[in-house]
Image (cartoon, rainbow, N blue to C red; front, side, top):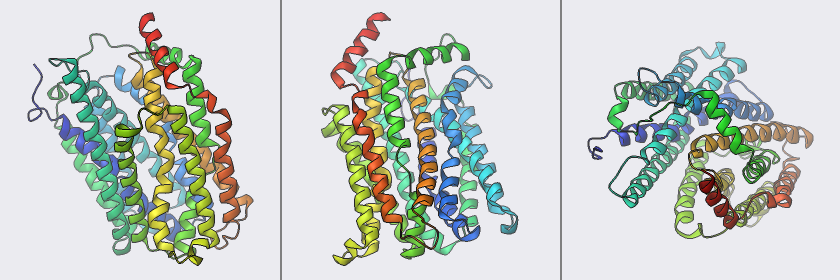
Length: 440
């Protein structure tokens, strides 16, 4: 018999997990200022560190398969959330307590990699719990779908709330506290999550029990078989290319806003809050009004919108909006935060498309693979951004070539549209889904 919501601690576990996941932007804002002001890195080095720290995200499918196949004390979700929180805590706390003179670029890079490794493991375990909770036996299929939908909405809100609060507090705290004090606060928060997690027994979550535990080799072979389907392989390839072919200039824009325009950190924090709110609103708008639009058309529209925002950034750097009477901080608040999160808008309709294409039973491992492909694409995008900044001659003190770099960035963003045929339309996707069910 399923436990009631008041008896089942699943919402407490997931609420804390997803909230902390969203709140990770709090120490990362401090990282940017610590690298710029404390270690005096240049824009290219900052961007390279930001993107290389995402390397552990690439191995998310491996963490998912490991969590599915390897049980720890009879549990295979809660221990991995605890391990993820522990790894993050032991990465942030040493940076916070170490004397600044002993912290080098190499040292902080290692700790950031360890932090993202822990975050990746925890995210995979949390996502698996959400997926499994939707399979809990209920009195009807409709009530099961309703329960699953409510949990999805709950964790989305928890993550967004963490992101909004993290960016808001980060923008204020960076002016009043040292970056290391912010690292210490987040490390203590992760320690609290670790201790609160290990006291929860997984059986109390009332997750469905698998009758057989598939081996790692079997799960890898099943994933490989799914990836051989042309419609799935081409779709994922297009998404990864659409991200990787666009040079990222986030580090350069951060230097431009803080060093050249002297934008205050609190304004940057509000800008990121605005972006997080837009991301949350996008999920609501998509579910209510845009799900009927074919995924190919919607994703292509988002790609064009990204290019338009890059052209807008170019006009901002040229001073066009300033001449029109728009203060720099107004543009940063209203447009910069939205521009940063716009590239994530594609993930929601793409996830719906992948769910239609994927055979039943492989959704979790396939989505983990998709997210790892996106993480790898972001790394490639960051490296291309470093090369582009160097090509146009942007340095920590010279931003004369930034406008030209933004034009090149916009052109690169439009290039994948020529291969949008790689994304199948939704009607064909549904037919593929039906054919897969018949084969099984």
